[in-house]
Length: 135
Image (cartoon, rainbow, N blue to C red; front, side, top):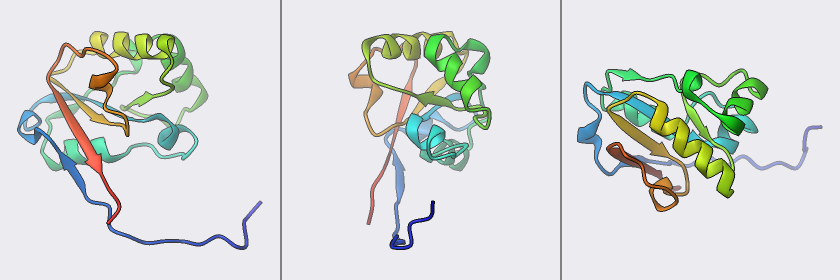
């Protein structure tokens, strides 16, 4: 059903990265906000844009390395490509996300989630935190 009273707001939303120098020429794992990808039907988000902007050599496809609920998410949302959706922040899902990250062969991890995943888990690879804000 279409909401006849919907308001559309256009605004700038600049994207920044804390360590973009870790991206150029590297194989990167891109982690995006799960609900944006799944319920929002978007195939990518801010982390993908930053990886391309700073010339990552390759965005590594995490699907072959995914486990548990992450693997189930790929099956449920076939439009997802070579991005890792951060789905849920429960203990089990964090453990599955951490395992998927550890299993994925890459030089760096690009985190494009509203929550800084480094505060929820130890990531054993160099990380780049992506932020965006409404201006």
